Length: 79
Image (tube, rainbow, N blue to C red):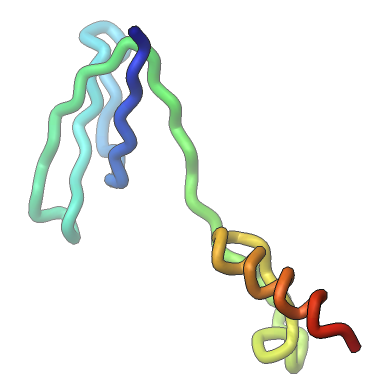
């Protein structure tokens, strides 16, 4: 059986020989040493408005699932 575990943390060190990751969570208070068979690194992102006036109030971003729900609702409402 195949399994995967999602861990939201800040990776501090990756030891590819031992196949471990040293990570911190909770504002760096909790330290974790995680072992892995296969490692997936997904970096975070933030929407960028490029300082365009009004974009924060009127633009729709597609970063989170909630954002797509907002877009769907807006499209169903119509113009």
